[in-house]
Length: 300
Image 1 (cartoon, rainbow, N blue to C red):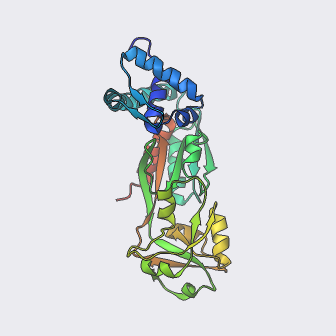
Image 2: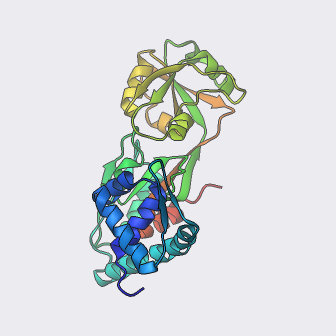
Image 3: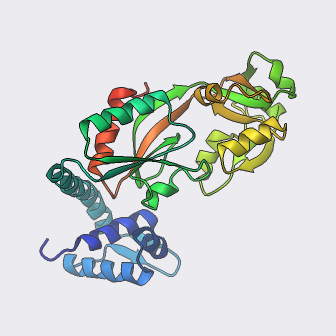
């Protein structure tokens, strides 16, 4: 281990995740050539290649695969130890930037209050995360953790706890034929234009919020795409499409005279999860995750 620099290890971890020197550099805020230089230095220390580079692709060697499996938990433990020691030295001071989508409900407010009681020297900042970019603020270091809609299947993010499980509802204009209904089946989504989400969110995440097929396989017509929840509600009120929302969000916005919120049977419940960055452990974010789990409770 003599002489190994932490930046060399971070470059290898980022490259193993991206399998692309340019994207690894973007993640680390360094140039592509700097990633290559750091990797060569690490390989020189180890004495064998960790990555195979061709003109068409980048992949790990067998030694690189084993090194990754051994390094990742050790690196996370090292960073966590440093963060915890730093937090203990300053009494968990500093700041915690919490990202959130939509609204901060009562349960999340209680978790924030619990964290504040435990870590009174840590300044808490709430930052709204765009509906169209659930993971970007965390990757850009604009927040330390974020409460986002599930699913989350990003290798560089840690998910947990999961909470706030609610049935889904359909927001429609009061002029829409569904507005007078007590409930709908998921198959009836094939009879309306579903408002989607634009932006840089992964396809699987956007499809979960606005599925293209019913559970039975019927195609669901695509409506306009939006960047924010308010845009979606405005389009639904104007009868430009219908938007799926969890029941708690529908209850929060339920007093609008121009919208109706109709429960939908047969869809998976909507859930929220707290996400943190795997390669940038944060003691305040870990402490907040504990407070969320204790206050709101993990979803079964």
